[in-house]
Amino acid sequence: MKKKLTKRAVDVLSPRDTRYVVWDTETNGFGVRVNRDGTKTFALKYFGGGKQRWLTLGKYGALTVDQARKEARRHLGEVAAGEDPVETKKRERVTARAKGISLEEFCADYMTDAYLGKVTYRGRPKKHSTLEIDRGRIDRHITPLLGRKRVGDVTKDDVEAFKHAVRLGKTKATVRTGPRGVARVRGGETAANRAVGLLGSIMSYAVKLRLREDNPVRGIERIPDRKRQRALLPEEYRSLGNALEVLLEEGANPWAIAAFRMLMLTGCRRAEILRLKKAEVDIHHRCFRFEDTKTGQQLRAVGGAAFGLLAEVPVMEGSEYVFPASRGNRYIVDVKLFGRACRAAELKDVTLHSLRHGYASVAGELGYADATISVLLGHSSNTISGRYTHIPDPSAVTAADRISETIFERMSGKFDQDAQIIDWPKRGLN
Image (cartoon, rainbow, N blue to C red; front, side, top):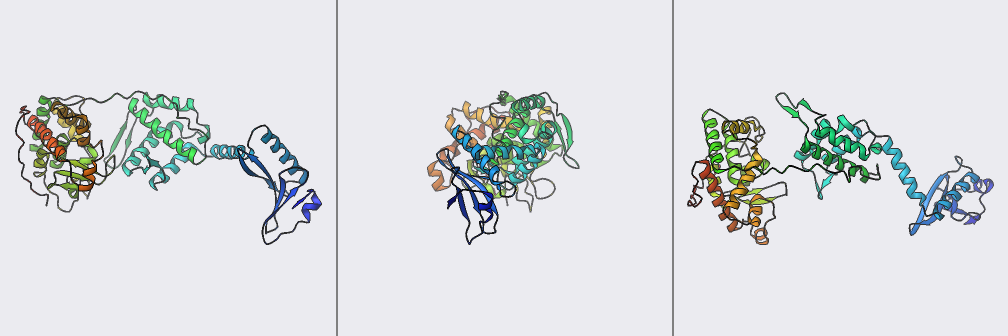
């Protein structure tokens, strides 16, 4: 339907069973939409970006016919100049919304959505343990330094200043995490990189929710990570092995001591061993069947020396974990004992992650290829045959046997790398 739109012409339009539009004969694309409830809204239809667009101008009453026609002609001028009024309106709406929410408030929304699985990393929801780390970085770095800024106001200069503030220790603090827990926030280069990385994820989510058009973290130069290449020498294995033995004799937590030794003999990640469940141990096939790791569900070949140690680990009845906490049905969390062992062994710059490097280094010394080492460390997915047979590659088991035996010998003070593999007793975990 077309007619010249005037006040009288619009006033006489009555509602029908379905919504309809009356187009103006003076201005192309300008019309009034009459809804079933009788409300009347001015709109503009045009072609922009290669497709038909529909722009709502406002309700009749709030706008007169002449005001609406003038607005329509203004937008048609924008279209002629190559602009898209619909996209412009979206940007203005996004900016207005972003101006109204602080980064601190948005971080709370981000964490809520993340726990619900709406925030993904490489296509998968973030793990609960990762989110707990994220929460700490938000509370200790992002909120104190940028929390008061509006989401839409954060600039690249702000991110650059944030990076250096964390690096220089401006957020340094000692924070209580519970009745007996304390977190010492020191800052530094690694902390700055991780905090900036998380801020980038938060801003990407803001872009996804149309709170921003861009991510101000993109293009920010990261501080080069100092790669941790520390691995143990044969005599250092012996010193650390002796220190752990002394601590055990002095009454130290036997599960913690066993977990540290298991990390040395398997090259597994810290969380993989500390959270190891009895159900994940497959003694018959000489492997661990991890339900969840950094790279997802995984089957990992484990050497004979590691299973020999495992057979000696005390079993806590009622706990599903191989290395349980002393209280509650949980796994070991406190690993301060490892620091005591390193100090007793006079080892510097050695962390639990160094044991993983050590395992890889011993594997390299024994002549194993990078591909084999990668599989043993859980960097690579299982082979096609492994996916069908659900057992580890025999060659990986053989390699794990020899590597774990070599490390065990070094822990015992013996450095003969050609020693025969011990046929460890395959005792169960009850």
